[in-house]
Amino acid sequence: MCLVTEHARLIRQYQELLAKTIEIVPVTDIVMLSRSDFLAEMAKVNIIPIDLGTPLDADLSITSKAELDRIAPFLVQLAGLYILQIRDCEDYGIEAQSRAASYHVSGIRLGLGNINNSQASGYHGFVLTLDKEYNIWWLEPNASFEYAGVWYKIGEHGYFPDKIFA
Image (tube, rainbow, N blue to C red; front, side):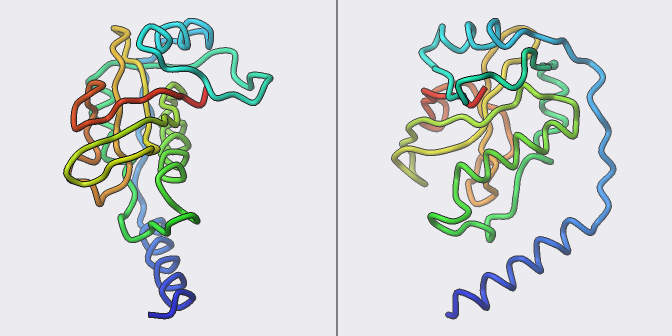
C-alpha cells in the first residue's frame, strides 16, 4: 500500500463527508463556569490541567447530560482517518473539542489518560466534560472504538483520565 495514495484517498473521503450539509443546532441550555471552578471539579478526581501558561478562556460553557447526548454523535470522526504519529488519538480529541465549540459548548476538552480494555491499552487521547450537575464524562471520538460517541463515567471501558487541556 502506498501511504501517499492512501492518505490522498482518506483526505478525499473526509472532504466528501464535510461537504455533506449537517445542520448544526447550537446548544441553548448552557451555563458559564469559570475556568478555575471547572478545573477545581476536575482536580477532585486528580485530573490536572494542560495549559499554555496563560489561559485563553476565562470561562467555559457546560450543558445538561441530555444536550451532551444529543451532540455526542457529531463529535466522532471516521476511523479511517487515523494515522499513527500523524493524525492519532489526541488529534481526534482536539477535533472533537473544536466541533463541540460549533455547538456552543466550550467545556468539552481534550483529555488524556490511561486506557485498558479489549481494544487498546496505554496512554490515550479523548474528550472530557462536566454536565450542569458537575458530573464528569468522557467520550471516545474515534469511530473505530465500539463505544465511540457515547458519554461514560470515569473508569467505564477502562478509561482513567489524568489531564485536561483547559
